[in-house]
Image (cartoon, rainbow, N blue to C red):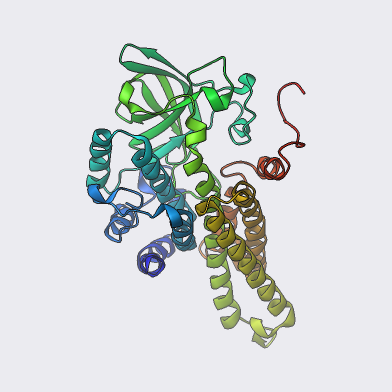
Length: 399
């Protein structure tokens, strides 16, 4: 039912919006890119408020099927636009994080603001200018602790630092910020997380990063200078990366789901094209070379879909192989879908590179997922460490 609801939203709202103006995503004013009705309609369909507790008016998610449910929905939304999928995914994951770790009265305050404004976005601030990949392995040595630091001053925490490459970072209203709170410990034991509202003095949004793909999600950078937040804005003390496991594992699955959605969109448009376009006296699908490519695309999509279901189930069941599988599907999906999108472009011939046709957009969007939530190489390191924890290399710090 949720899949069908999302599919109707994508087919009736998202795809017509994308097709109406292929140049809209290239507007240099980030506020002008995504029309307000896109998030308003997502809100009306119950898609924006996934993960918000029911008592606050949201759509609760059963932990036993959370990753599987979000994967189905994210796949469908990314079929329409991957930037929009990423925009919503951040809200879903942070809603789960806040509902799990924030005091009830703060949940009431923050979720009330979120529910009242369909344009309210949330952002997860982990990546920094130095050592982004360190956060994903993680190395867990003191040498690679967060540069962003938080110190306790009376009944407030004071945060100083800089975060970059933050999804929703440019236009979010609420940020979950990770900071070092214990210099003497490794990153796993010395990192805390805080909720920081956009209007908090000392938080400044400094830029919108202009990316090659996923451009309906405004990636941004923020600077925190003497940013004071009350003690009860802390979500996790010194073990934030461990508690964020409820966020990180499903996050890998969701990157794969977004990749799959992009591939499905490219495939469906290509199938329609090869059944309509006549070349050499017959429709393209009747040419053997074209038929072979279509079969290859379909096979890759099925393989990604199968591994995605397997990994999502493993994450929901807390299986011992969940760490390896969620990284495997992230890497596998991102690579396979780039190949699918390349085939789509080539089957469209010269039209494949034309902005007004839209096939090139799938390729641009697919390329983003090669490094989202960790680079391919870092993800492979995590796979090896999950399979061979006693013999895999440490990758950082003295041997």
